[in-house]
Structures are given as structure tokens and as C-alpha cells.
Length: 407
Image (cartoon, rainbow, N blue to C red; front, side, top):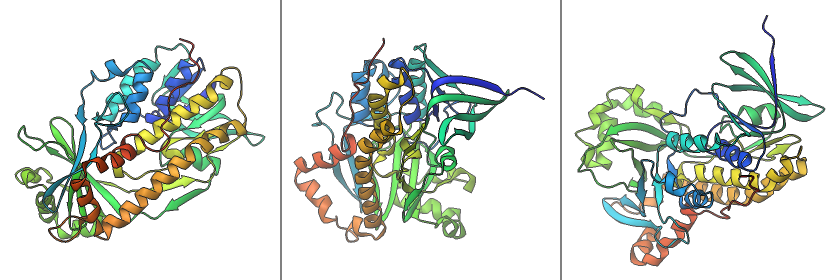
């Protein structure tokens, strides 16, 4: 029988996604011994969000990483446009934002995570443990004191003064901690798929709206990552109608793809994303804090989830790093993170819920060949496009890095 390996550090972060990796980077930069635990062997998973918004790019500038970061393969979008009932209309103009980068960068999430982890590894206080899946929390006298995890070499116990749960919407952390989750009804799901890209295809836009339905295309270089919005629970009905009908539905939105929709030759090439919007009532207890999707799952609407999670990580480092360098933090310290980040989360989730119901009822697309009134205003008055640009690009209460630095 093998002996259970026991390890110790100051802070354990569960999950190597955007929130976890950014929190790990910032805490290590501030001199906090930190271990990020990622259950997979790499970051290469398809159909993950890949929008890096101006708020995150501004943070990269503050950290001195921007020039190198922008050398990674990416596309820059300075204006979001939508094709609504066949008419191309501008939605958001980022060129007047008060940021160094006045665009959204589209970069595969695995490239972003590989970049950030490579820089975090330069700090002697940083550890990244891949293929390390947390299966339980260690709790003693009502305080979380560490985690139990599975690795290729067996189980380990990793004890820490603070555990940060950044393990996404299906979080082991908040489940094991017994946190209560407030679910918001979301009337949509999304089907994700790949379709090859041609050189003369149109430039990336916000999406194609038609009679209350939506198709989003994300430029991945040599292929389109396609998101097709469907009514909640409607995938079975779509399958029953048959694959040729589904292929035709895609081509109806984006006619230039008609010669390539046969690439969707099997339902296995079409992945269902069950859209959730939820939020923990309490993000913390003694020894444990949840951030990112583990604290508040967001819809893909606006692509803001990744950047909101990164803002959580920045606030966590700003508020906790200095005290965590020398010892434990109290639950009152952890509540300050929730107090700082809960209002932006609530506001964005309210807007997302409104948008979903507005879109599903068909009001988002106006009459059959007309534009909804709000979109017509954006078309008539260009200055109004700065409002959605600020909401999407910066979000409410954007965070700026000011935690202590030891390098």
C-alpha cells in the first residue's frame, strides 16, 4: 500500500483557467508561495472562450507583458458588427475607449494560458501541477485547510492557509464546501462546431441575427468556430429534423458557408453547451474563496465571462496578497473580495438575462426585414456605440493591478 504524499504551501488554487492562472501569477509575483492545480495534462480544449477584452489588455500593459503578449497569434477587432435580417449594422466601437488597446483580441484560450503560465513559472514561489484533479477539500474545525487530489502517481494531500476555487461552473470546490447556488433561468443553449475558413470569407462580426435566432462566428485562423443559439433543451428536436436540415439552417444565416456545411457530416462534430447563469450566495468560508465561474457562471453573451473572471483574480491579489505573504487570511478578508466583485457580477448577469429573453422572444430582430429600434439608434448615432463598447470592453468596475511586487 503506497503512502499518501503530503505537501504544504501558502495558497492552493484549484483550476488552471483564466481566473486561476491570473490569480496564481499575481500572487506569485507578490511573493506568495502558490500552487495551481490543473486536472488536465494541457490547456488544449476546444470551444472555450477566446476573447481578450480591452480591460484585460490594459492589465497586461500594467504588468509589463503587453508587447510580448501581442506577438502571439491573434486577431484584433475594433468594431463589433451584426448582420440582422440581412443588414450589416455596427454594434460597438472600441476605438474611443480610454485604454492603450482599443480593440478586442481574439486568441485561443490555450495560447493565453500557456503564455501566462510560462511567465508565472519565472517566479520561485509559483508551482503548476498538471494532471492533478482535486477530489475533496480538507476541513478541520470548520476551516478549509487544503485539498486531496488525484495524480498519475497516486493521491496527494496539499495543505494551505488559503484554498481558492477557480474550477469553473461544475466546481468541485463549491459543491464540497456546501455553498448555496442561486440559478437564473436561461432560455437558450448553444451548439458549437467547426467549419473551415476560406481566404475570401467576410471579416469576423458580432453575429448573424434572423427572426429571433442567432449564429456567431469566431475566426480561428484556418477555421470558423461557430456557435448556433437554440432554445433551451431543443437539441433533441433539431436532431429529429435531421442533419441536412440543420446544415441548411446554418447556410441560411451565413450563405458563404453553404459549400462547407457538409463538413458537419455527423452529430459528433456538433457539441452542446448548456448555458447557465448562476451565482453563489456566499463566495467564501474560513480558508476558502471561490472566484470566476466557480462563484458565478456567466452566459457566452458578450464574451465577458473570461474577463470578469480575470477581474476577480486581480481583486483577489490586490486585497489579499500582502497579508497572505506572511500567514493566513480571515474570512472577513475573503468577504472583501466578494464585496468588491459581487456588484459588477450582479449587473452583468441582469443584463445577460434580459438579452436572452429579449432575443428568444424575437424582439431582438424587429420585423422580418427591419431592425429593432435600439439597433437603429446605434446605426443613426455613432457616438452611442461607445456605450456597448464600454460595457463589453471594460465592464463595470474594471480592476487595476496594485498588489505588492517582490520582483
